[in-house]
Length: 425
Picture 1: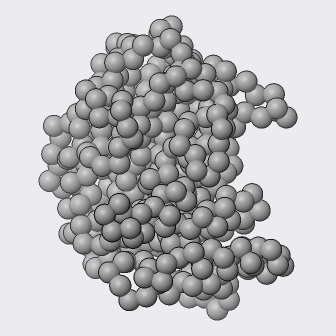
Picture 2: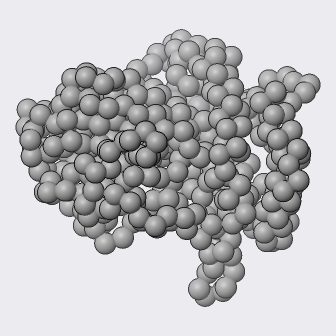
């Protein structure tokens, strides 16, 4: 990572530390969480991870260090870590404990993380952060980085595009300093060149396109408006996903009760902008504050290898908690009234998964959008999204999506190109 000089902790980090130290119960919970990390994951072993982080003070110091840095490129092939997500990496074992999950789901803790991540996000949008975009070791335009970034572009389903140079795929200029990117965030939210991801069947309103360059995760039918929910959540619950509350009299979940949810996730190496899956009118844009690093403890150290009985935590947490965080994580909901009456209202739910986790819509209520039009973006970190469909909407998903996910969630495989054919009504 590329680090700024510093002498004392950032005020937002100091705020989190003071909050912990002013609450005896919280101090005890942090101690309990660290005690739940098996010793084998804290010592010299084959398990890659933050073995040195064994108490809240060390954790706080590591968080402070992260927000003063720009993530360096790390090979997805060579490294066994949460690729390019250093904050997530600092918290990874803590996230995998039951008590840690409970702490990371608390509103007071997430209020402090919001302030911390806002500060880091400001640095990552500054010109100083562009220092990570260079061709040397750890640089995002080094030979190794460009090779893996281009491989992600070329290997997506529904594309024949095979770029041999980064500038063939993305808007940039290798002759300029930092390839012309103004900041690390500018690089992370890089745009495809026109024509790289053409919109499938632009004149056919029966065809829905993939809103993000993403790996399918789940396809679930007859989703309830409400459902029993806990940190061991395994089902979708529309009311929680959409932030409906009695206090605000929101009724959004009723639109989709009994309908369909499609969820997918994005690699940190992927294109991170959202595009409209259909043509229509924006009827609502809702930003929902939530968690940043909560994960399902049932997928953490409590999960055991059936053959050996040893702990098998989610090394890429919260990858195995996508269903749960759809109702908890910081997210943005965009609802579109489709021109095609057979589609009705279509919901797009952007979900932050790791690190800065910012979900920024660039459309507003009442705006008309066309299929394939950019409607927002994720800013630095792991990301996921859900598409929501009303009951009675009959969709035929592409074979490589529907056949794989109709039975059970998936976590591996090739991503689907943004703007390519996803389903037909």
